[in-house]
Length: 328
Image 1 (cartoon, rainbow, N blue to C red):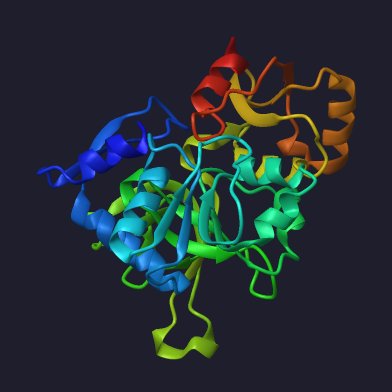
Image 2 (tube, rainbow, N blue to C red):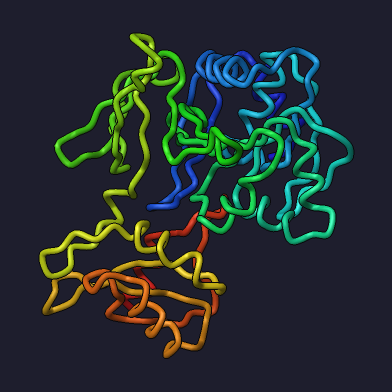
């Protein structure tokens, strides 16, 4: 979909817009969302970041997914000046920008360019979403002088319902939910979102979370903060031990250069076994590194070299495809 097509859909008589999920944990699906809720989400984000009419907003994400659509809706709803460039792994734009949204892969690719760091610093507010931000990327951004945020959300919440700072003295591992967003957990520790402005009814996620109470310094108006440990889908039950695939990946990310992911396969002895898929061919070195860096029960039982780690259209690990490769 291009910008002209989306604008035609936005301005038609229907109160709905069709969006597509990314398919990171299963088959991508199509759904209809209300335009009024997209507008409400746009206002909440712009108010949180202090954006005002006339500020510039960079569209460098594909309009096939909610993140790209929401950048356009924020411009339309809040009077931002939209600057649209071709979606790519290394977006190209000129001059300072007040607001931009990117996926982690785009930010990482830009940091590899000679002028990429300087260009990213020209963005007053940069939000990064659509995938996990590993420790290497977070470390590369921590001293930037502008405002860089990680987002939490999904298609069902019309982009994000919480942000956390990645850089400066306010950097944190915990997300702050927007005003009007209420959080709880189910019996398995998965996050439950009550965000009436953007979603009708409770949204029970598959994200296993840790919720912290409001800071005492904030008084009665404080909001709880939360961090995501991983997805319920990605829990590996190995020998009676529950292992979160994302937690293992977080430990390994600073040490592995080649793309990789942690997944699972059925095992006659353990029930499920930890599997490391990698684009690296040096399996022996990987085994040695995992023995040094990982607790005993987290260490992969199987190491599989693949031509390419499967990714979704938004750059996330395609978990179901990865599990299929591990089980082949």
